[in-house]
Image (cartoon, rainbow, N blue to C red; front, side, top):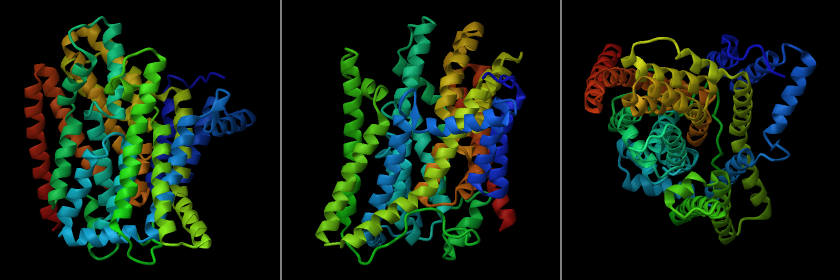
Length: 518
């Protein structure tokens, strides 16, 4: 049933309700649930019977849609459960504790622990889900040992995952964007750029991703605990790694009984990584073969099945952990307890993810994204177009919780607008959309990548959202200045210089703020 609220500001209410309530109450499940109910009521004109039917069908579609299994959702949920079991098994055989002891000898201070967390993105950049969960698993024992807050760990995971993935052509994000850009170039008859060449040029204008990574380097170096992050770091230095008023955050419990072997953890993670990457290439190659297209790495990543690859990698990693359990002669009762703890530890994240997917589906039916996109059609000075597209993409990703959905909607709109006005702004406009989508995704409590970064760090979800917000807003301001300069000058270098000057001023402001508080 088509709703009269489509293309209307009423379509903004469900995501805004969920986001505001989540921040104010810190009860994410309740907030998402109320947002879902409001969205369903709007879609069904407040008919209670039709609303209930829509809620039931939306819940069912998470697992079964178009007369078949919803493979993407089911595979992601299976991977989360497998990862929970892997973490629990590594803890049971003492491998996690052994790695923490090993790292304590070699990693001498907090800066080195943060550096390890930040640099691991260049090994796990193939996919943001994969990075947040895997790196969180590896680094959490080390950051805990050096009293680095879970909020800081979640920030390091989230602020390296998407910014690196969106700049890397050899990643699930890169392949997806290259495919979109390729279609846009073909549809507008542009032959001066290849899809890959355009993607690389757009990366040089993605000011949000670039300056977010520079900010991460400063945070690793130390002394840049902005806003509420300072409180979490002070508490961590006092030995409190999570908000004691709220209890221990979701995460797999430490059930180790002895110090095991570091090699068990390294083998499990290496197996998980290598098999997942092999799965990405294999499923992509299979899709290319079925289409009669010659194999290429980018082509394979563009057509790969990420969910299926993650599950296969998770099963392989679980198999390695099982060998370790057998070698230590773990009893049958302890096997069951270990697996149960792993599943239990991942359930809170799964509940949030299911509700986030549901509200995203209903928001899509309300066409919230299209309504936001229509706002940019208002008359505005040409040089402001990249800046306005950056803000609009940020709002859309924030409201819908999906950067990929924002790419899919906004990149074609940005291309259509610039082709009708000034073709020279095509790549800057699409770069602004890419940057804005990552910015909005970083700020949104209903974003799946935000949820999984919280999960990987075992950090309270809203703590992560609120502590990351000052960093994201600061870099968004820097990016906005860069896009105004880029639109005015049509020069990538001028835009970068303007953004750099704005970044320095932002750092000066935060340094002054810290001195005032200190």
